[in-house]
Image 1 (cartoon, rainbow, N blue to C red):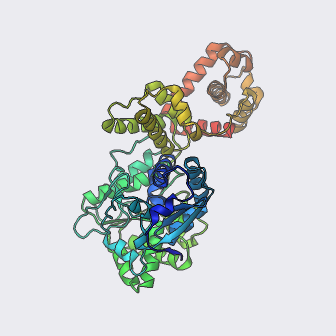
Image 2 (image 1 turned 60 degrees about the vertical axis):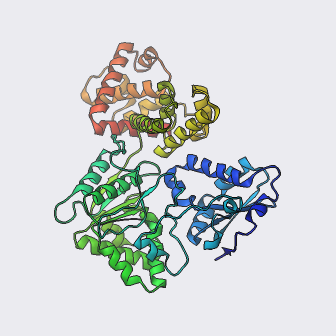
Image 3 (image 1 turned 60 degrees about the horizontal axis):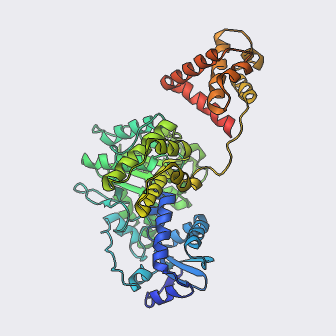
Length: 503
């Protein structure tokens, strides 16, 4: 493990090789951009403790407190950090990440005259995790993190990673894709009967769809009811166990974990190592057998966690498994509106017109973090330039958040063929005058998809469906639009057809 020494002379070193540029200010801008582009969760997990040591000879030397963080950043984010740094300081052509010792923390800022910021008091488990190795857990928050972590707890409570005060049930926006997960999370968090309700509750979703928000909300609500809660990310669990073995505190580590009422574990897909997986399996079994609640989150269902042992996957799948689906336009609009309203509390002059908000919600389809990044960019434009947010500035601000490819040109014939195949009818049936239910439904769905996925007019669509009148097409579009708002099964069918046509 490479450990940087004293920070003495950090400011002078940081200045070398960067003509006319303040590297400390440039690094601050880099971190702000990373936070806006990656979202608060990712930034707090991997970049909050990433610090600039110096810029010299075209190399920006950065430090982190643990080897795990160094390895993760180098494996997953090194190119992004380099490209972001180069956009601020053109001379930087290389990023070097090393592990620092306690005395080397925040060298460039300290040498430049910035007052050191106090560290948050570690919880009992965090102290156990860091014992004997001079390490701090990668997700432990600093006082300069964007949202202060919640540190208060009920008597006898055990804290793991801190809970974000913003991530509560009250701030969670519910839509069709996450309603089941939200309801299950609330039931588990507020359950005051004997034993666990759904055990384990297993939530899985892609990046930025709200599973971590839901985990924090469950933790807050359970603590408020007086239950002993511990929230851990997979990396904290692994480091806690490894450090406990090194310091011969493994028994105490196990006893702490198994003496709680609710264990919340995020990103379980990252748990690696035979002995660590075995301990996780033992802990899982002990808690479930004792009637203690376990909530687990991952980016995939249990059956697809190939790195985990079969018996662990089986135990995870034995509870309630809930997927959080992709965000539809209505939910994206609601999330964006909530975020804009929250920002306007602290920036009353910040205004985004309904037209711009609708454009952003329709353009950014990947996840909620990109929506938050879009709001941050619009806010930066408004506060830094003092100008009103227009459609043109919005387009420029979120350009790289929108998929960098032209939308696929979809043909009405392709829609007809896919729908016919999906519903076991022929394309000639859809174009015919047949009025049986088995034909009418796919015909109307095909007309609806032709209207929403192509630029064809209603008369043109009618002609392509056997020479029908435009009023027939309009009736089909309105009917399907109404039905998908009432029937979740039909909505899922139509959304699946959309994705198959667009991919």
